Image 1 (tube, rainbow, N blue to C red):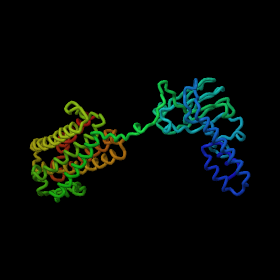
Image 2: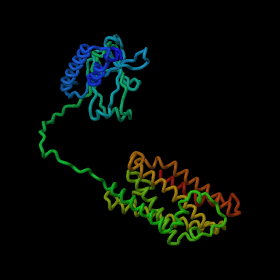
Image 3: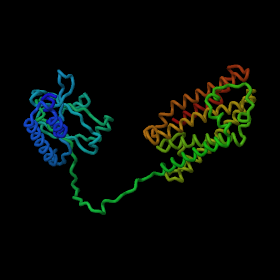
Image 4: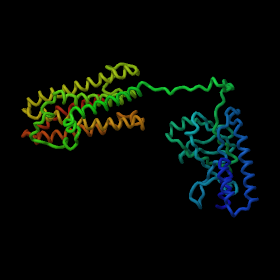
Length: 419
C-alpha cells in the first residue's frame, strides 16, 4: 500500500481503526512514522467528534447528524474511476461527487451551502442550479419517494476548486417544543408487538386448509391421486367409467369441489385484504377487520364460489343437451375441477410463501396473478377442446361455439368485472 492510499484512509476519521491496523502491520514504515500517523488520525477523529455535536443550517436550526466533508470523491482519469478527494492531488477540480445513503437518514434533511455558483446532479442527471450564499434544504424522504433508491450519487459541479468551499450536511431539524427527557425505570417498559386480525386469520385459515387437504388424502386416497395428478390431467381417455368422473355429486367427489371453493376463497381474501375490490365484492361483504368479520367474509366468498361451480354443472347439462353432448358432461366437469384444483393449489402455496417472506407480491397480487390466471384459463380451454374433440364426432365449428358459450364468454366477463 502506497502513501497515497494511506493518506486517503486518514482523510476520513471514520476509517481510523482500519488505518491504525494497516499502519502498525506495515513493515516499510518505522515505529516513529506509524506513531505520527496515529496521532494525526486521532486529532482528526477528535475534531470531527467534537464538531458533530454542533448545529448547522440556516440560523443553526438543525442538529448535525453527518458531515460529508471527508466523503467527497473525484473522477480520476488514470484510474478511470471515482477516488476519494485529496487536496494535494486534486487541486483545481470543479466536480465533486459522493454517495448519499438516504436509507439511514429518513426524516432528516440534506443541507447545502456555498459561496460559489454550482449545479446539482443526482445520479448523473442535472437537477437544478444551486443558490449562492444561501442554504438549500432537501428532504430525504422526498428524495427516496422520487428516486425509489436507498443510495443516491450526488455531484456538485461549478466554479469551486476544492471541497473546503462546499458545505454538505445531514441535519435533524430542531423542535421548538422539544424538551429534555430524563430516563427512568418507568419509561423502560416493554410493549408487546401488535398482531393484526388478518395475521390471526391467515394462520388459522392455512391451518384449516392443511387439515382439509390431509383429510381428503386419507379419506379418498385414490380420488385425491386423480384430482392432483398433472399426468392424469393431460391424459384423454375415450372410456373413463370410474366413480370419480361419473358421480360428480357423490359425497366423496363433492368434498373436492368444496375444498377447491375454500382454496379459491382463501386466495381471494389474501387479495382483497389490501383493499383490492375485485368483482365489486365490497357491496356484499361486511366492513371491518376483526377476526369474526374476516371469517364471515371468507365463508360468504366460499359459498359464492361453490354455488358458481354448481351453476357451472347445470349450465353444462343444458348446453350439452342442445349440442347433443350428453356423454361428455361428467368428463368436462371433472377436467374443470381437476385443472382448477392443481392450479389454485400452486397459487395458494406461492401466495402463502409471499405473505410471509415477500409481502410486496401479496399486496399487488391482482397484478402478478392476472397473466398466470389468464394463461391457465386459456390452457384449460385448449385442453377441453382436445378432450371433447377426441371423444365425440362433433364438427369443429359446433364444438368451438359450445366452448365459447361455456368457457370463453364467462372468462371475458370475469376479466371485465375484475378490472
